[in-house]
Image (cartoon, rainbow, N blue to C red; front, top):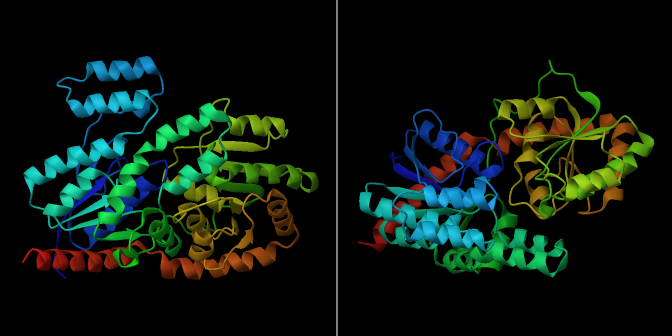
Length: 417
């Protein structure tokens, strides 16, 4: 197999929050291991970069580092040599929009078209107009974890009042661009069959343009550890607090029911709640202030230890494109209870216990059943380990990407012959 010079684009790549930063790090590391020359281009927050992988910042105003208007104005005014993209970023943000995808695409396209020299471009989910410009000059694969239309749908469902709905519409105004760009892309890779189906439906993309390659996880870190004792009444979930898509409300409401039978139970949420936000108010309302705790910005090693010391993991998502937390928990040998949405049923291969999304009573009953029959749940967890090692190894993922890259380059050359 030829060795390629790959430009890997990601409009934001926080290494300690959300799946995009994890994905950029692990895939670039695995492709580098195969001998490819990887060059990451990212806007802030910037990624953790594997050894031997090049990195270049695509700077923007970084307006979402703060939500204070004065701080944002200061960032804008302090920027020297402001161009039209800086003005666009500032004023779209000012009226409640999210401009980073669009401005990242324009800045990166200008840079790479001038520079040249890459065999292929991988773009991680920006779906911006600049990506279409790059596709004319380079073989290109778009990596689309799931269509953001699903986030938009659930945010609207859980919005309260006209004003909140208005600002949701403003925030998701980039979807018009996404819907224009997606069907014009020649090659998309997505991590699940469920996501592929939604991309076809929501973005009107032809099925033959979309390939499914599951994500991987770091099996050297996420694994059982017999030296760490599991705490019987420690439950763990990973969820962005106050994000309806993750279904954290369901888990918190279930906790109230579980405590009636098992008062010692504690829930650890890997995530950060908004100060005086919906999640904190719900916890107080249900009298769970001493029973629900939060941790955030954990390294993957620290996150693995939290799974390894928990007796049970819960994923109550209403929608997922893949779901790293479910697979990470199973890789650590932790029994899993999961909502039965299509993606989670797919990636967990039936090796979990399932409940209907938003049904806190059904979830509470499953948690209580775990305490009554832990051996039954552990059998599932032991079986899941075999599935994880077979299906979610980054080395295997990289080999599949390598084949997709070779195919895309060949098709591009033939089209321009």
